[in-house]
Amino acid sequence: MERPSRQRQRERDTERESDEEAITCPECDSAEIVTDADQELVCEDCGLVLDEQTIDRGPEWRAFNHSERQSKSRVGAPITETMHDKGLTTTIDWKDKDAYGRSLSSEKRSQMHRLRKWQERIRTKDAGERNLQFALSEIDRMASALGVPRSVREVASVIYRRALSEDLIRGRSIEGVSTAALYAACRQEGIPRSLDEVAEVSRVPQKEIGRTYRYISQELGLELKPVDPKQFVPRFASSLELSEEVQSKATEIIDVSAEQGLLSGKSPTGFAAAAIYAASLLCNEKKTQREVADVAQVTEVTIRNRYQEQIEAMGFR
Image 1 (cartoon, rainbow, N blue to C red):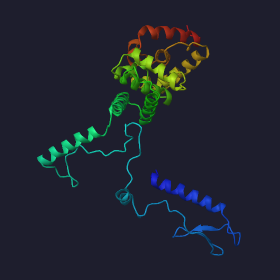
Image 2: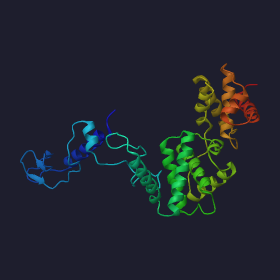
Image 3: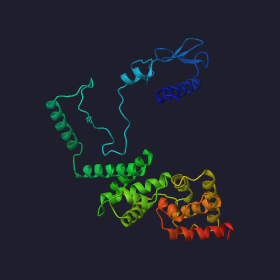
C-alpha cells in the first residue's frame, strides 16, 4: 500500500507533466518542455527559459525516509466536523510526562491539572458553543456504542450543524436532535441501524427521536431512501452464527417478497428477521423464533406474521 504523501507527490507530478505537455516553445515550436532543479520551465531543444518564477508547492526541507518526513512535518491533523471548533484549538495531553517520557513532579502535575481545566473552559466562548460541544460529544458517544464508522459521525455532525444554523433546535432537547441526526446519518450512509437500536444508546424516548427525525429530515430536505431489509441480513446472521447459504436464501426470500409488494408498510428489521428464520429452516440450520427475535429486537408475533407471508410468496405451504 502506497503512503498518502507519495501518492500526492505522484498526482502532483502528473498534473505538472500534463501542464508541460500543453505548452510549446515559442522559438522552435517544440513540446519538449521540462522543469529543472530551480523550478524553471526550459525547452530541451533550444534551451529557452519559458518561466522562471514557478511556485514550488513542496516543503522547504528534504526527507529520505518516513521517519524523517514525520519528524520534519509541521502539519497537524485535518479539520473535522465532529468537534465544535473543528479541531483547530490546542489540546493538552492527559499524560503527566515530559518530552522525554519522565513522570512529572507533584507540583508540576497540579499545575498541568489547572492548565487542562482552564483549557477546557476557554475552548467555548459562549453558551451556543457549549451546547454544540455537548451535542457533538453525545453523537460521538452514541456512535461508539453503535459501532458505526467515522464517516457516519462526520455526516451526523454536519446534519446537526445544519439544524442549528436553520434554528431547528429551539424548543427541542439537544439529546433528541443529536440522536435524530445520528439516525439520519446512518440512513444516509447505508449503515443498518434500527430506531430501536439507536434509542437504546440514547437518553431520550424512541417516540421523541422519531418525531424529531421526521421534522429535521423534512425541514433540511434530506433525501433518505427507505431502509432495505437486506442490509440487516449479514449482521443478524453473523450474530446467530448462520452460514453464507442461509444469508443467500434470506436475501432471495426478501427479493421475492418485495416483488409481490409485501414489504410496503412493514418494519425492515422484522421483515429481515422473518426471512432469516425461514431461510434457517429451509437450509436445515434451525433457529428458534425467540433466538431470532432477541437478535433483531422484534417480537415473536412479528416474525410469525412476516414468516407466513413470505412462505406463501415463495410458494411453500
